[in-house]
Image 1: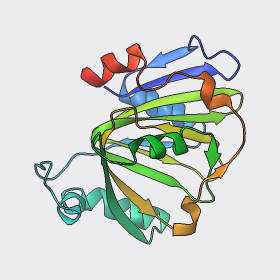
Image 2: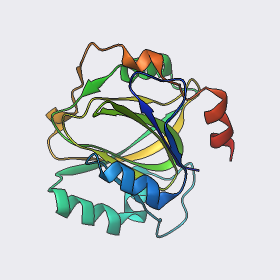
Image 3: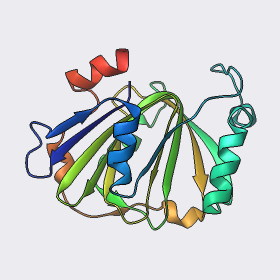
Length: 190
């Protein structure tokens, strides 16, 4: 189940609001310029599906988004608990950073926790299978794939250089819940 927890950026212990239905999540994120959508595959996929098969299963949605934002390329990334660099990759994205371009992820499988820092709030978005999130350029954020990652995502690019993380140096991410917290474990299992 997808979920949005909205915190004051100075009070990470208890969220001010918790949303777990698509429309309220979409609307709250739209208020800070973030696109949140849910997509359906045109056919069943399995763990062995190739990048081309995954993209083709979501071709209509991918093409609409590429046209709307003039994206130039699309690919699929996969991460699982057996990846030899999982700890280093997780740590890299657990630090607040920005990009010069959109960060677009569509979750084909698994889940991940995007934390967006805007207007004195932290918007913690648990994205699950079927969720698309598009974070505009310049919004400080961090991403947690968890200590035992399992995700497959479609990524769309306008300019590859925009995906370079520009770290803010703010330690805010260290104060907020991680994906291994008991609350998120329950949601991932649902």
